[in-house]
Image (cartoon, rainbow, N blue to C red; front, side, top):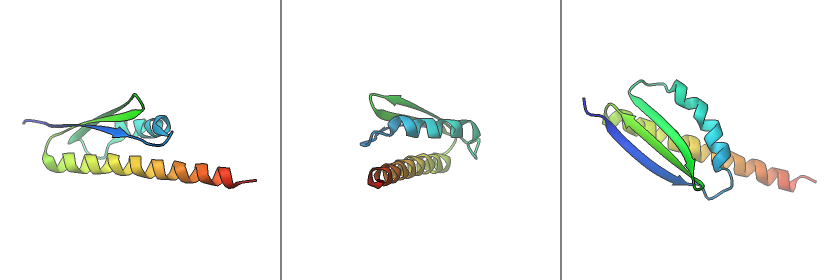
Length: 88
């Protein structure tokens, strides 16, 4: 069966790209489906996400999962930073 590879470069416009990478890396070894494989690296301040899926449904699910994790982590880190700056 032919795989479905996908490469994404995600430019994180906040200073949290390294923190996001460290939060997501452990998830790579315990993906809920064996139909998708993933790797992620930090290059030049951007996250390079590589997925290879057995089928298009698994590819879509994998992309959605990682993009939601990245967006959620970035938003949480921004909120934490804002709260820390507000604190006396």
